[in-house]
Length: 296
Image (cartoon, rainbow, N blue to C red; front, side, top):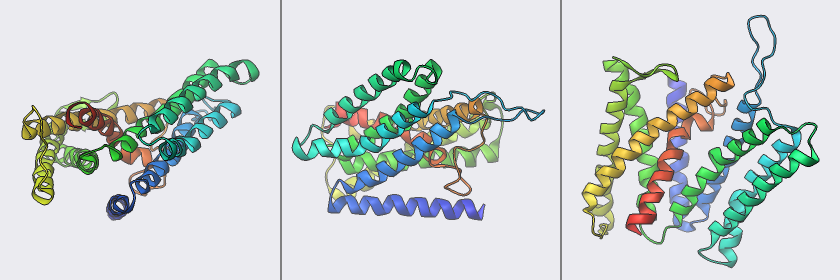
């Protein structure tokens, strides 16, 4: 427990640190996203290629085994992803998404080409695994880059992403541990309970409204628009909390099918980076979509 708490405090400190750095220049936040992308992709490739031993000691097939060239394609995509966004932004401000779209298109084509050029080792299963490892987490992380560069309320959007998800996750665990009760999805994640899910949603929604109140108190810059901002923040908190918990289930099913307990070991007591940001990825995508469509 102490190790888990210490790791959590360090993680929060890193997030807060990058929030301050983005005040110097918004691109500093890209370093954090880049780190999530690189480490998370490594964890995904490792998980999808992991071979578990059965009771007799025989290695079982990997969930989605990739060839060497398919792994190279995934890592190349990840290494170039964030830099391509800022490279295009530098020369064509506001057009960073073009770099991401072009790179993603080339990545998909490369995987198809490898089925021909490396047909003896590259399989359709491996191509699917490579696409999954490229999308989750790297492509989803693009929503954090885009939220960071919103023309207005970017700070509020990022705060919602990094506050709602941890609050919902933490209180889902706390409430579930105290109340217990019927399991939420026992075949996917045997420890999650319905009471915990409800607790996470309630506290996540409350955190969203409280965060907006503090934001307006400090900045004196309330959201203007046809929708009541308090109602909108409550809805954002509600749905972001739900998708956070769904993101946890997605991570759980990936680990179950891959035959592993944790995605990595870089965060003692928590597992890997993906074990920590699984729900945040889904919350990020949702929050960005709301701000892009209804607020900016």
